[in-house]
Image (cartoon, rainbow, N blue to C red):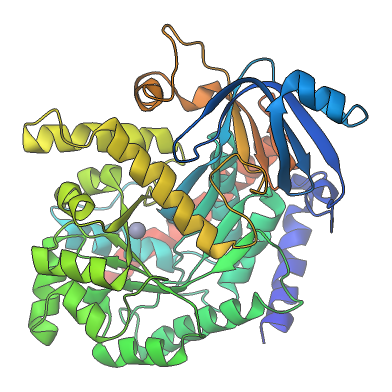
Length: 488
Ligand SMILES: [Zn+2]
């Protein structure tokens, strides 16, 4: 089913965009398992527990994996014949992880919403996101993914959990995104958000897309070690009991759900009206929660729902930039952390500059609680480093992600940060929060391959891809606007 259609899609797409991709062979080498490379002269931040900062150290990378770490002189003596990359005394640290994003939102930047500005979350969905996702066709999905992936490479984000929606191009959409991810060289967990908002048949298409894609991960169709999948659901407020049951019934064994939950008060009001239960209780009754599932936001959850999230081992993602932008409130992160809920950090389609999300999280809770002790640097590290790492490592379970230790995936970035004071394991979170920024990232490596080296992208022609995206966005905006004129 997919194979036939996607072959046609890619024949068309590639004919149109073949001139924007260069050196794909570099990225799509079938195997570089035995290739050895020594990165020397780095200040290595391991993000082990407890964290270590190792000055003038080297990392030996073999294929996709870090094989050895030690003082530069020791490793240079131990491996005298390998390719050497001098890090020039930059910091080397694991690439950032984004636990919830939407590549499909790329063409929303600069888009004018017709009529009055949305006055609440429902209007934001109705006036912006739902007509915009309906405007997306195959090539738009491909280009919106590629521009987000380039943004991620530039900003040092190496693993992303994408939550996709394109109701007029459902079938095969996850393959199109996977194609973009493969070309980018990044690591991603993909899902299609099932919803009843476009009718029953469209919901069934969404279910089938998730099932087909997740099953394809174990076949020869898709063998990339950098792509995984989840079963996506939009949100309780657009899902009937019947559809939730069908999602659970069709979910491949072992797969987890990825769903927005209790993002705005409307989600709770809708759930109570539909079912008599609050959102998290309703999702629990339908088997949506669990240690493989992600609920995004959880802004409006009460103590019983927090207990349920903890008891089921469900992951929760926090996106403060999006919550502030949508005016939906401030998530009860302290209660979630105190209850040992597995809280992670995403960006909900904002820029893939994850340190911006760190800084927002660090500030917003202090402001909301009138207490500067709220959301400490250590809390941020627990969420954005340790919990995100544990979540990502579940989906790529052959090696840990988010740590620089022997045996872990070689997903790392080099950061040219000149510290005005000493950097120690103890004060590192505050150096990152107050001193690091994404323009200092010079190099991004995923699975042992350079995706950006000395600020030059390798394998993707950024200028041409963004040129194509801008051209394509005009068509998307026309279709978006037509939904308003057709409505009268
Ligand atoms: Zn979202």
